[in-house]
Image (cartoon, rainbow, N blue to C red; front, side):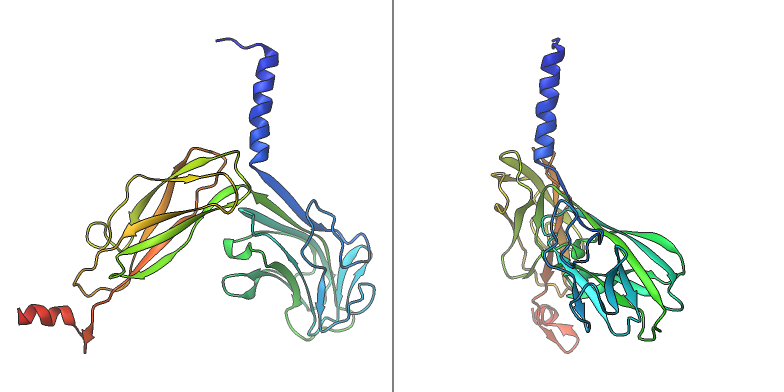
Length: 304
């Protein structure tokens, strides 16, 4: 069947529009072009202003300040500055920034991101060479949350007055798509079932869609530790926050075993814009009783 050029253009426009609807990119950017800790130069706003620790709140004075359209650190001992942003809807994010450390002397600066899993900052880069350059870092899943944050802190408390480092163009590029998150579940082997929750997060989809899933052996074995699911289907309504459940039958055996695991794997979707790369881990804890170093199940066998 042949289509006119106008009809082809309309079809392509409709397809492109549906992709744009299901895919988003936002930038959180501070290029320090004004002397303000509330500056937002990107398409999205940071959740808070820059907040100094052990320092005043004046961006035009102190050991941390905005100077010459850059964030300046001088004689930093015991001081730091941080800013938070909401990356809870992101499926991927990249941090980039520029720095000038030509006047750093013997000092250095740590670039840190908040890890929502460990509830602590972790260092993703260290500026400790006397050059100008750029840093790029792809955020991990644990670094993307509603409480995401970046912090700059000195590597020690021995800065002298002339040792200076400048930071500029702090930017997070966040990618958002519709995605399905599957939680991890831990049960005792006599629980009967393990119930997983699959949640639609990120952006809305273009409409209702289905997701296929299956169970995959880890150290747990289908048939003896749990009942396999080979072709499960979840039906989502397309709105963010919609949840579906996956119920897996657990086998209560009489063998003494360490904790065993299996995985919920998403294998396909009717909406190709939906990210289904997440997995859920099921952990089965053994419930056999141990007397000394011998499982009670063995005593039962000897008595029989």
